[in-house]
Image 1 (cartoon, helix red, strand yellow):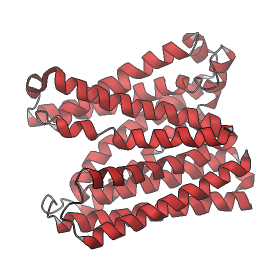
Image 2: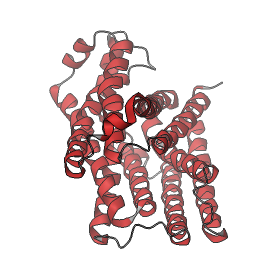
Image 3: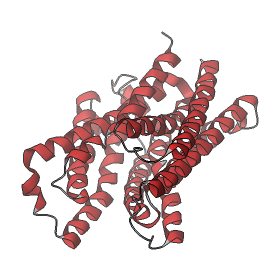
Image 4: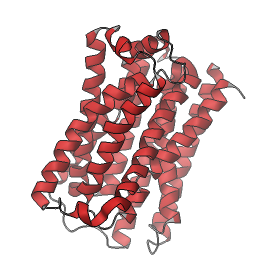
Length: 338
């Protein structure tokens, strides 16, 4: 199997894991959202990244000391920005609903998270047939996500699950778009943190594990806004006592969520290595597409579209079809580079 083919297979697994990581949350019924998210943050952003990095990257301290401080600060900054984006996501959902928020976030993230690395790494290829193929794939990703948003809104109306009037639509739209920019910071961290990856390899890390040197500072920085927001919600809603009600069972569910999410992040980094120099450019929109496709299928399997009617489901399938087409175009572009 070629490096590109294996990279795409790893990317598929990463997308499936990322889209599935919130499923255990449905069974943590004795906790409020902030209880589960705090436990998830501790596992996914504070515990697992250092554990994986120290376990796979030799001489971690030397790796970080060998690169300019500006590189490390950039990665930390991207991590903090991504963490703030997660807070914006929750606020946007409250203002405009999950369907529209989800679409704006992933659509913006797919576009920005692809175009910035393209302009950074290969600006001379933007106005070529290869660059045009990448842009066409990104346009299809954005279109597919927006179509899925329309389906989601139709579904919400059909099954009457909207949580009353929205508080501030304009603010919600702005927060969702800002969240999309922030969500792409994970890919920026990997792209602009390339010297850290190179340093890790020079100190003995394998090509497949070297990107773990980026994830630790990025995730630790991203944990700070999430922790602050969760503690604020716990105080505001007085839900801290609910930790006792959930017990070890709910902690286990949060750990499974963390393992799936951080595992998908590691696999994404691994896939970019397998895809070569264009990995962060081609891998990110495919990753975003696979998350939406898998989340859509899981939603159908778990009954989220029950009683929504025929029209929303047809619109959703059309959006998924656009995303599948985008994946094939971008995958073909990846193969042409191998």
